[in-house]
Image 1 (tube, rainbow, N blue to C red):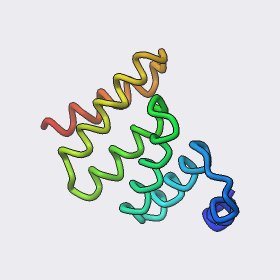
Image 2: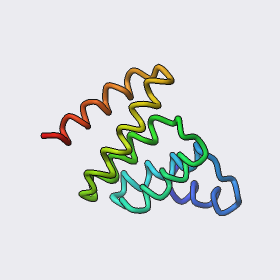
Image 3: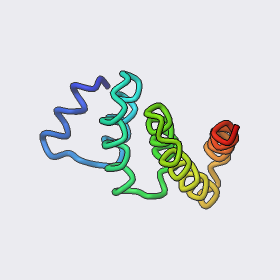
Image 4: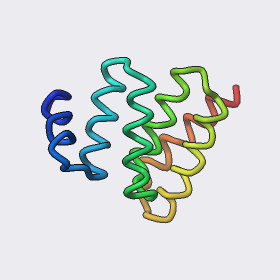
Length: 102
């Protein structure tokens, strides 16, 4: 679904973690980094265990040169992924954190 359709759903009051994740990803893909971070934070307000949202939030923050924010997001996401047994997200965020430390 495209960003405009997702925004219409949000305007109609259909707010949810999945909708905010989709909007966050669409904004990130379009290079709209601060808007992406805003939607991903809203997603995480619905579901703080959404490891994929933590991963994308970290990417959005890193792209804005906010290394501390990215580190915090990826560390929170790593903990969420470990609690959920989401091995793929866990591995990806470990790699992102290692790259940040270089």
